[in-house]
Length: 223
Image (cartoon, rainbow, N blue to C red):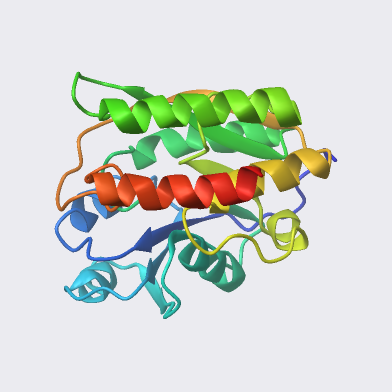
């Protein structure tokens, strides 16, 4: 599918958020100069939306609960050809986004980050093991050249929209990867640092319940 990027209009960074008011200031402060930031408030009960607006981010609301619902709302609201996605918890460095964007300009259709923990304990063993097993399944069943589930990613907005509505919860990144493989996209993976959250508690790896819910979503997509 690889094609040139014509007049991309810059990069929009979509940040799906639910109760990330504590971590969001550092994430926004680390954003590369010139990138457009779009925070999707996914039913926060704290000051996430207000914090984002005060720091210059555009904010849209998505009432349907779920990571995938929030991401897809952000992609639909973006106005640039290139769209990046990362979490608002501070675990990933926005300063590494240009490396993924460069992969797009070098011919990738989807540039994804492979998380590499910067210290022990950052990635709970049960979450890391589950991620490893899922990535192996993606490689074997779909021929995807990935070792992570694309927690940070960059792609063309029009291309992502062309895949149609995808999973509304945690299964979204997997369904995106599978859809990209089926569409013949060139997918390129690059190492990114994975750090401790700068605030709040993870909705997925922060508890067994969150991990189980995520696993349920993953299995629904991989069947």
